[in-house]
Image 1: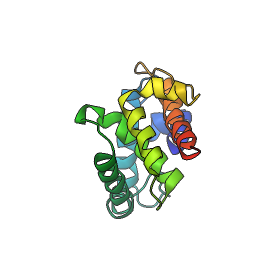
Image 2 (image 1 turned 45 degrees about the vertical axis):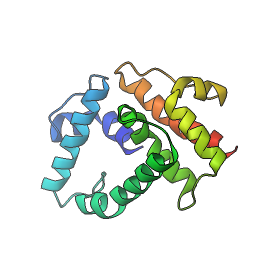
Image 3 (image 1 turned 120 degrees about the vertical axis):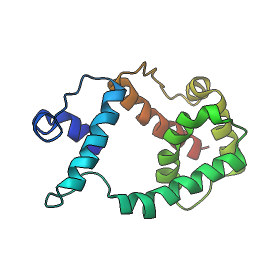
Image 4 (image 1 turned 60 degrees about the vertical axis):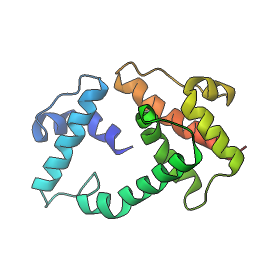
Length: 153
């Protein structure tokens, strides 16, 4: 993951972004936003993060497609916005252009309703992040692992 490379480069954080990483998830958002700004201001360097055009024209339409599919196929409410947002990249990577089956959507719906219990049922370890980046990053991987298990059903 590109973010891991950025976080590991303390020189980049200190000199280019004028930030330090203190290990919390909120700090990662600050670093990512600063990296976007830095790349937009320094067009001569290769980008690590997607450009605004890539986000608008390629990534966001895929996100919207999956958001819509989740809203159509799952009985979930707006309070589940964070798990849905974290689930979408895993769905896109796993299913691509195809759609999950009815039984798979049932499992996705169950996962969104009872995240940890469903992960446990699928035999996927699902860590509690508690605002720390290390466990938040592990949780991202757990979303991918859950979707992989759902795709195998």
